Image (tube, rainbow, N blue to C red; front, side, top):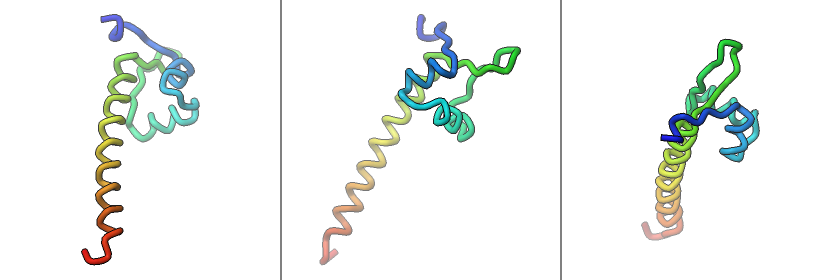
Length: 80
């Protein structure tokens, strides 16, 4: 419940994800994160949103590693 109520500024979100503000902005442009906007136009991120992003990126990166490992094994086999 606390996760749903916790809102972070762009700087806090970048620190939480351990990325730069520039990278956080690129993630937003790519559509990986969609922040809330204050009436003044400032970006705000929920802790839940950031944790979901981390979970998704971990899952997708594990799948990519398995695929690249399989490709490396295939390429290393001269008789295949």
